Amino acid sequence: MNAQELLQLSVKATDDKKAEDIISIDMRGISDIADYFVVCHGNNERQVQAIAKAVKDEAEAHQIHVKRMEGYDEARWILLDLADVVVHVFHKDERGYYNLEKLYQDAEILGYHEVSKA
Image (cartoon, rainbow, N blue to C red; front, side, top):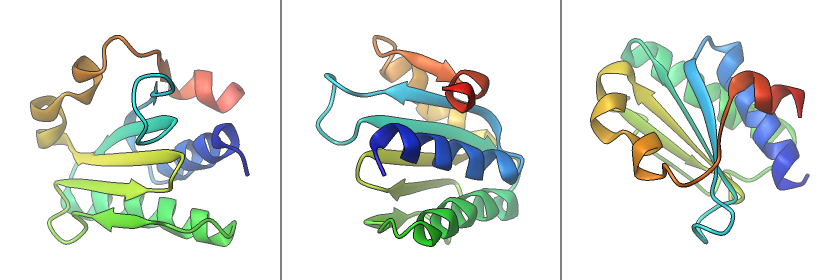
């Protein structure tokens, strides 16, 4: 599975659990960490955990190894490292504080519909 397909799989998994304000940040040429970041948020700890678990389960169902998942127990900012794609699932209250969109404002940022149609 290439990075674009993994991005679409991740975005769909977040949407399936009603994540809000789902965006993709194109990190190619900006960072060696990953090709894409997916950023979204849930409204409470239980939803944040459900979103992260859905991404993990969907990746594993497609034989994609989740290299690392951090922050699950606290459910304030869960990071899932899928190699080419890193998924950031924030609690609504934390997302504005960390503001990854502004940190990477020079990168191309795509909304859910732009990614899901690609």
